[in-house]
Length: 235
Image (cartoon, rainbow, N blue to C red):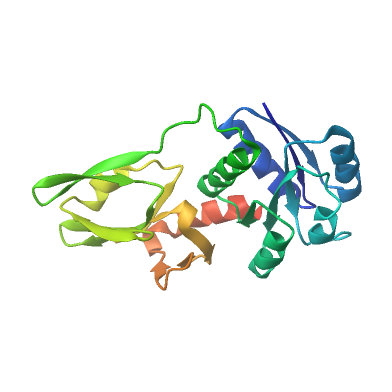
């Protein structure tokens, strides 16, 4: 069992981290909205992993990070991407940009497990098999950033790998993909939640990709409901 602590002055963020830890399994989590109480608990109990917000009303997470016990695995959580370099300068294992999506959270925990030496018994990577001309191509879902429709084909874009062109409809493609990791946002686009950097209710920006993905009118409500969950708003 991996022992974790989350410190954040936003209750909705703490509830999301708690939900994600339950989904991941093999994690014991304590949440604190008070940085003082959280740090006292950390010094006493010495957890394996600490999820730490950077900009809180009363404290700065970068300062608190320097007070963590030696050997603590640190994962920063913040809405401000400009802190990424500062985070890694205090030896953070990962940096989760809010709103935090589960696939990205899962990847951060996997990195933390490697850092801690806990690499046993995790699920295998998810893949799908697509027909490309006269052969089958296995696509690792961790690599997929977004999918674009093109007539009777789909183009599957992968980070650092060639695009895959397969003769399949978007509806068929949507059925193949786990809805916990991908979302249809337009009649011509499906995006990986893991690849989203930031978004409004009509545009999606992906990590290190010079492409703005539109949110279609038909998909605004479903996408906004997802947006509301991670912003703590009412539908």
